[in-house]
Image: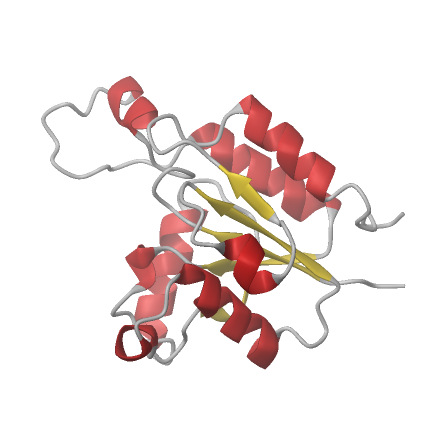
Length: 173
């Protein structure tokens, strides 16, 4: 049986962090410039192990239209140039038409809306975020890997993710 899973991604506190910024010796840079190679490797592990698609839920996607091919190309390229091999879902981000600002939604409601509109064939999902956003209350179950805003995705977070994905069917398995 081919099961499909979604992995919802934040960027700050997952792919970027003060730890990575300092290690990259980017002290003079105002903005974070580099994705955490360990976080990228872990997401590649998830991609290689399970039939997953990734969905961007970070505020970095706010203001970006889903139907602009160059914007989608830029986002996919930023991840690919960091070594990320994962496949983005279609649509590739929550709140594809940028209605969240009008509805005053938080990230939990954006994920719920995405699942209701585009996740009908999804068996399960997991979220990586450094904020809680009432995900458990809004989504009805705890699927959050709560990372660290300063240090990003750490070993304990990877173990938590593996635990949450414990019942997922492995590829070719």
